[in-house]
Image 1 (cartoon, one colour):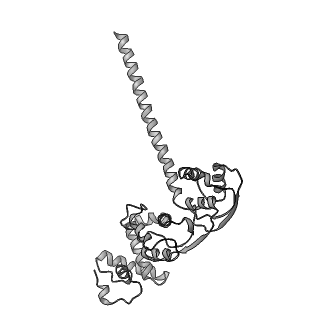
Image 2 (cartoon, rainbow, N blue to C red):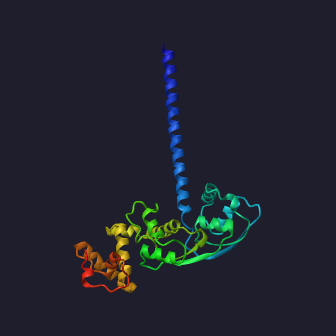
Image 3 (tube, rainbow, N blue to C red):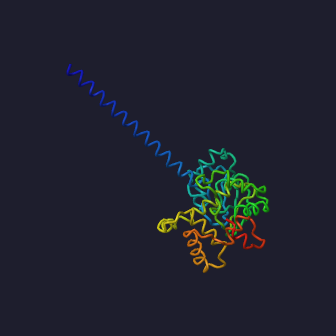
Length: 278
């Protein structure tokens, strides 16, 4: 009887150890998967840098996907060869990559870079988003450039999964000059690029924002107002102080920036009645 009990205890101990190993193995698989998903997410939808400098390079005949990705990394066109290879494979684009001479910029997304490598497209368009532009004004600019249909950018700001946690992307799309490949342009990829640029610009400021006691959203909102109200950089702190004071005390803002935004009218004169609108 004693021998049988000992055998059962040993079997139970082995079973417990086995279950524990399986649990740790599953946890390890989940962590590894999360790590690679993070790598992919960080690189798939945003350019390697904001550097618009064109780079000329050659891809030798018979080059493998791995060698092409490593070459692109050395040129500074991508940051993560693994993420790039996975992108090309998942999209079924590997057979389209060609050998030859190419010119590309460091500020291209994966989709734009693959377009260059597969079709040799280097027709680029420079888009300057002025500071203080609303999404509706960006939409008008892109439509005039022939990159989208009128209203497409505004619609994307409401439906594209750029930042679902935000009520609106207004103020979160960074104004700057961007180079895009016209043939491969999409409202969603460009909007994602502008949003990610804003996030990168905010990163070194987050600690100061947290210390201020203001939310990032409030800071972005007020920054948008200041951009419209202040004529010079020297005026910005003064205008910001006035706006914060009125917000904190519950006083009507009474400023052109928010009034014109509410009216969606950036040209016609404003009257006292306009500024009194709730």
